[in-house]
Image (cartoon, helix red, strand yellow):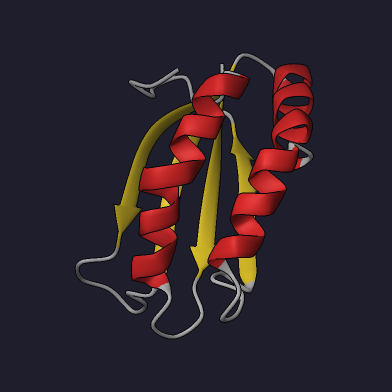
Length: 108
């Protein structure tokens, strides 16, 4: 089992719009593509409270590549993303990391 940590660094003032897009659009599309989110977080205390952090769960890298690529090229997603960014990109910088659990991790 692998987990992917994604960090969306939002444009100023765009975090509420990004959260809304996930809640009303992205999660439904992910479900149709079999993408499994584990959790979502924002920063309550810390150096940057204009980011969204989330974890996705994958069986392996092949599953990740297949499902993520289908989602990324889904015409419904492309249209929805464009419609939510008519006033500018919501997250101009996105980081992602594939995490492997340690031997002592509760999440494997």
